[in-house]
Image (cartoon, rainbow, N blue to C red):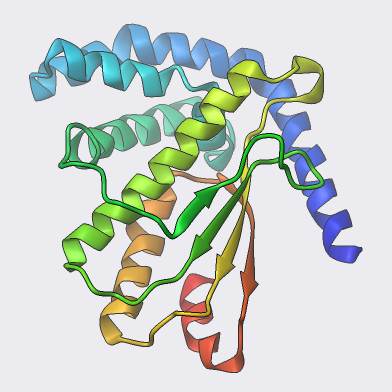
Amino acid sequence: MEIYEQLRANCDKLLEAYHTNLEDVQKLQETLIRDILPSVTDELNLTPDATEWAKEWLSDTGSIFRIARKNQFTKSFTLEAIRKNLVWRLDNLWQKAEPVPMSNVHYLSLDTLDPCGRPIVIVETVPLEVEVDIVKQGIMQFFETVRMNLYEAGKNVDRGRGIPLQCTVILDLQHLTFQRVGLDIMTWAVREVYPRFPGMLAAVFMMNYSWTHSGMWNVVK
């Protein structure tokens, strides 16, 4: 019950911040699309398709809000952070290879939400049997898919309930292996990928956790 109360309080606080700052965030989006996007388009010589793809992300109010919140809603810092994030996305997510098969990741139906009304994702750990670069691409793909799912869910939700700004992850550690490369990949993900999607995960619940996982958990924290 204590965990639920804490998560409920965090959710309410987040939604309050969202509604309080929504008008400013929307004005920020107008600036980004009007001024920043053309600048990045010229700098990187983007194709029309790439520019439209970038605009889709800048139109994701939830994502822009989360970055603004991370930067304490300071406009100059937020604009710079979003610009850097946009360039990173174009370098790492735009028109990459075919999607990495991820049968171990389960995005539950939007009819199945956590007690705070947030989507749930179940991730089963699997033995590392593919190239490291493919694993890294899969991790980036996972975060981007979660972002897109939240964005799409927000389009259809009753505004009176508040849009889903975060999701809850259930991580099954049953088949986790303790290879050095696995720890390196997790460290990379925490340092290089997660900061590009700030505040998107409300909570991560671990199944089949034991003391043998404590070292890896320290890396995540």
